[in-house]
Image (cartoon, rainbow, N blue to C red; front, side, top):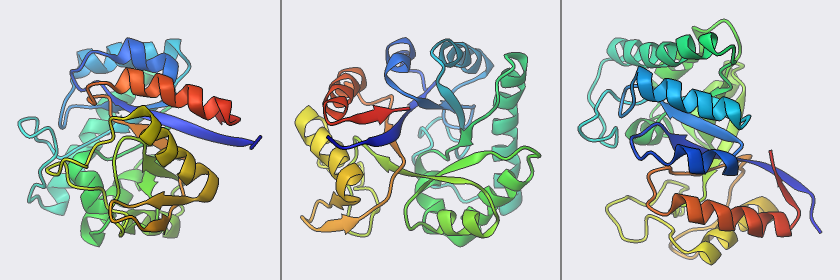
Length: 246
């Protein structure tokens, strides 16, 4: 039996309302902090749930665009982008201080996450935001991305992330949500997808190619309509293979 240890993270506070079911199944979470979803009420509620279940807490900042759920690229100046991201993270930090909890990580959301993976200008804004905090905060990043390289150059601790419920292109970009094969809904397919990345450090792209990838944390989108049942089965299957979730 193999001896692997991974983190499973989930995006929460996005208005779905399934956090109480998700928290017992994950080891870290990314809380929407007002950009694409969420407000002080939802943040406080999810923080308390995460604290109860001893789940590591991350900020999930976004382009300030609730209308499009942060999934459309916005044309913003670097100054404006920095200001909104800093504000979003600070809002969550203020709640964490009340609860005497440390912010574990930051993970950009949606279109911003995809943009900073390939765009140096936008990625540098994230870097400056991270450097503006006194305490070291981890950054969840995709493998071989622009943001990962810049973070390492600037001594920002990173955690490589892959997606449990999303398919990949051969260049390690995520298959567009406009395509039917973007999301993974089958429990057996999801297990093979994730376990292959853990065991072999490779992912099978939608083109059929086997592509090298590294991941220490695996994301399930909380707004996936069957996220809870998928996570339950994924955990069972991984634990059968000796994979520890922590």
